[in-house]
Image (tube, rainbow, N blue to C red; front, side):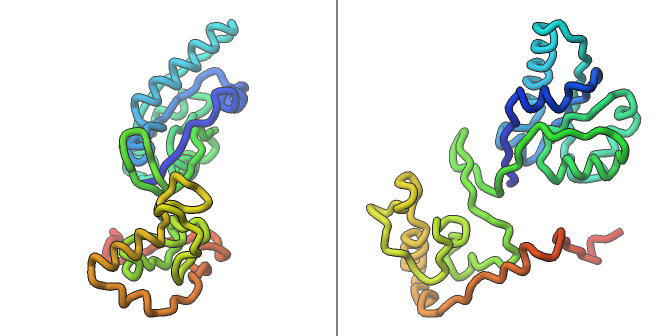
Length: 222
């Protein structure tokens, strides 16, 4: 899932300062899972903005809504008829959600309340860890479903650096050595032979340098 963290309240206040009627729009998917942009967080932020304005003697109207997904047009349609009632939309969606809103409602002020961080997994309650760079050239099949680009601090493709200690990365003693995980899993699966291959550097041309990436599947097109 895509993870994100809420911007500092001071930054949000600065962005919305010119506006009096704000719609705080959350997203019920990824950012809800990582407790940064779901219905609960929308309510907390809206309350914080109202209380802050009251304490400073400012008049502001803050309304709330949470879409199932901010990056899918059929869900964004719920805002049609609403957006014209507000000076600005404060999005608690990821960067894709913010831009999707702006695409649909051109001319409407769409402001981000989150900093989008990474693609990761929920390790435990309150802990999310990055495990995918979305590089577009997945090699997980060779490395026992452990991404060396993301989870090895040095991004090594052909074996460990030798600096790990007690199974932990030398750059972060709290992080497991990705290559120890790879070797242990491949050994358990009887596939250590995969490490006899020499893997070429990642093909970064699939990630960047050509503008925004896209996937077009004709079988999914209407």
